[in-house]
Amino acid sequence: MTVMGRVPSLWAQLRALAASNYVLYLVPSVVQGGAALLLVPVTTYFLAPEDFGVFALVIAITLPVKAFAATGAQWAIGGNYFRVAGVERRTLLFNVLAADLALRSLLILPIYLMGESILRAFVTEYRQVYVDYLHLALAATWAGSLWPTVSFLFTVQGRPRQFALLSLIQIAVNAITTVICLAVLGLKVQSLFIALLATNLISLVFEVLSIRHSVAFSLKVRWLREIFGTGMHATPGGLAEMVNNMADKIVIQRLAGIGVLGLYSHSLLYQAIFRMFTSALGNTLTPQSLQIFSRDLDTAPVERALSAWYGMLAVMGVGVALFADEMVNVLTHGKFAGSAPLVPIWFLLVFSTSHGIPYATFLMAQRRKRALMYTQLVPTLVGIGLMVAGAYYYGMAGAAWAILVTSVVVQATRRWVAQRCGYRGIGERAFVGALAIYLAAWILNGLFHWPFWAEAMIFAVAVPLLIFRFKLVSGLAGILSLEKIGV
Image 1 (cartoon, helix red, strand yellow):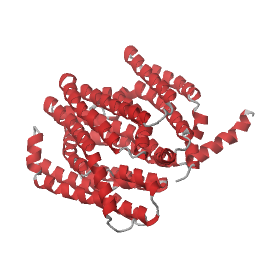
Image 2: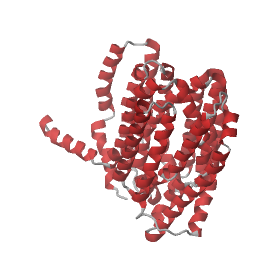
Image 3: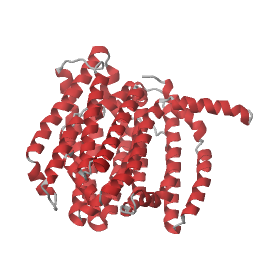
Image 4: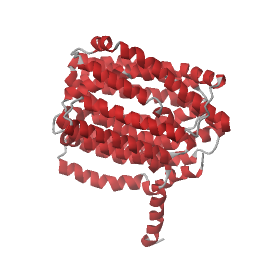
């Protein structure tokens, strides 16, 4: 086939990709990541590192709500959705959502009542206004109770357009509210809390409207027993993860101060952006993978999609390794440059999380709840001690490396358990190759400290080579093949 003959074929592939589930799940992540980056110059202009530290610390205090209110909703839905149908399926979904909302409401109340005492215990530089911030954060937490389950339900049901639309609404509300509060109303850190509350409240309205036909308003003992039984397995891992997510912020604040915590929490913004892309992958793979692993179907479509994803990570990773310092410095007016060294560490977390998606989905489909619980609980508990030690001796970087190591151990143990249950490795060679390329780019840039023009030339040469190496153009078919399975 001539070059001109290939053009229509390539164009057809790109058009098909644009309408695929992957892109519909990816678009909100790209838009959210772009909006977050566009907001960085605004928020860092009006706010100081100390403000970001306060926001991170108050949000951390709300984390027990999510941990103690764990119903194992994703495990309950993932293990039963394709085993029941009709009214029974809708009843399951209503019971899961009702349990989510009831548990969160019960847990928010005591934290609201004891807010001042809790803040005085955790915050070294306590101020009375922090109580108001905590109340706003708790209200936002309640309003966001249903979204984790509803978003997972969208992926299981194969409703990427609804997922994309609601995600874009959340992004728009958050960005507009933040800018108005900071630039027009002249508010400071409370702007971040108000934006979070507005986003979750408006999202809640659309969530209820989106799922009203997917639920049957009936409480059933069978499903409540299943949900709370699953929740008992999910809670220990959730508690350990909660302590881990709280501990880094509390320890850094106590050892280095609220300003350093602000730098650390700002670096978590880039981690969150990276996580958005991984979530898009997980949302795309989950419904098809659950069917494949539940019914013992051919895993080739998932393998092709994963291999293409690892190739994309290699391309993005080279960019992160080369330009992280310059990007953070420019976006934050130089005020948050201390966050830059953590960004490449957080990108390694993307590799770890991506590699673990098929293992977790396999165990979910096989209803291995205990395996999922213990592989989350034990490494996370050990990781908490590692994180405290890392923060004590090496500051922010020590905490970040400890979190990365913990994630790697979680995924490695799940891989080992899944293989013992009959799982066969998927996309392993592509994963190792992409990881090696990223590490090489990061290490070499650290050793030679290339000027920006050299980094730009290296990146310009590396991108087409990586596209060719990982066959990314033909790899689009790996993502498109997932559309042919159906839900």
